[in-house]
Length: 151
Image 1 (cartoon, helix red, strand yellow):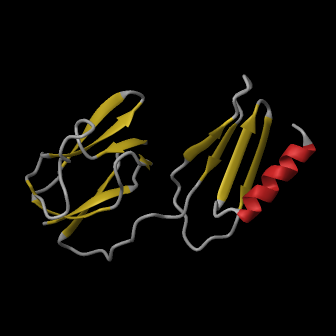
Image 2 (cartoon, helix red, strand yellow):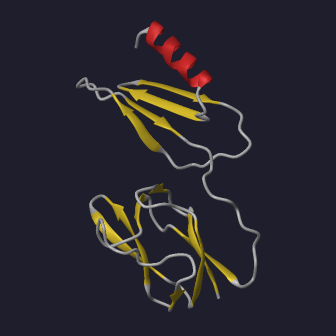
Image 3 (tube, helix red, strand yellow):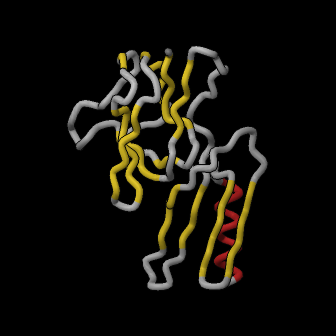
């Protein structure tokens, strides 16, 4: 890997709001990280080199949802897998749930797509959707909060 290219990436990284950067190219790997107040471990692919060597650059953005105080009557729904969050069964259709929607135990809350498989995420309890932490099309990581239900 070219030293000038690495220097350019480091310069861009230092000026960006990206907190963590990882580059993997054949047997070469470099990781850059800035100190941040809060960071999410969701990795989003933001760059792919058009060359056949498929250089990938990953960035870990700042946390996008507020952390709620733990309350006894709030159930936090977390992603059971890494994948893409979908709020509705298809583009243009009404979301499964919205903030304020009453849900029953076992009701479909959302879909998480992983490796072209659509996984239905169901309500573990009955209640009302209190907050939704992600938006349609977001990448979610295993065990990351998706939404909360007030029992």
